Image 1 (cartoon, rainbow, N blue to C red):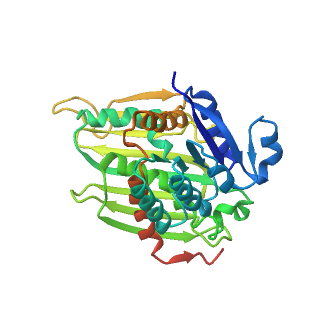
Image 2 (cartoon, rainbow, N blue to C red):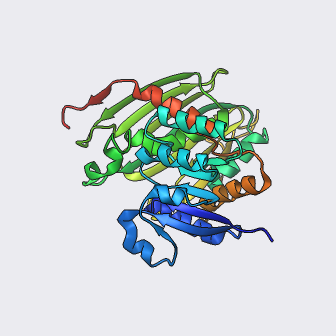
Image 3 (cartoon, rainbow, N blue to C red):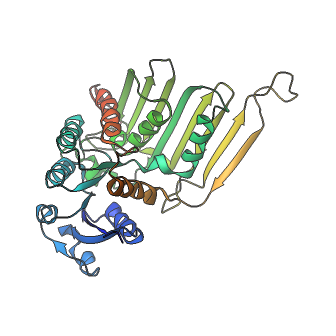
Length: 341
């Protein structure tokens, strides 16, 4: 029998509560403690050790630490946990800025026995998994283009969120949500050597962007386009991948609220020469999904890497570093504010 890994959670908001369920559901994990002074009453009902200070939790000899804090705390908690010999699961984004993930990555290199994974769970959504399998099979040929839209409807209290406070969150909608789509772009085509970005404050009285557009190109010429928005009003996720012999479209996103719509994968194939059908209207196959195991899959991957002493393959610190390099290049451009704001 393998002794369960003792896992602690720093931050017990939306993601911390999801991670508690992940720990409870995994046979090789047990919950060793939680720290979140703001949720003390909620935590007190769990019959689990409660820590007033995150440093005390990290220093208590845990095997694994889940970092579910606001962005500004991520590097401090992650680095201390690594230095204490713990393995670490960090939610995205990997800090407020490029320097944060550079520090975390450096700490990981210094302590190679620690396993570190960042929670880019969209990689493990069923539509993405199946879409990548189809493309990797070569059935649709080489990827030519990617186009992504990831947006939400910021409510009338959007300006009060800590995510829009640069001192806490570090950036706006691109860092908070668009980073997932950038990570998916890299999952499909690898790194980009050209980045052009534009961001603006278009509707909300906040000091960070509520809309961002990003254009990217790989060394081999594959192009990608992202629109990340807090003014979609209807929650929207759509990833289009154009290939030599067809295309795939992943739209909708399985979520707790269901506000992104049902997750679907559309596979379209370029008509064969002489095939009798309307030009520009090929046959399509649509697959529907109703179960999201992405949260469990990424935790299971980390546990497997810890127990088998093998490198993390998905959501690595290098993945986090590369995607933050893209965000950093966009954030170096001027932040424009609309006259009406």
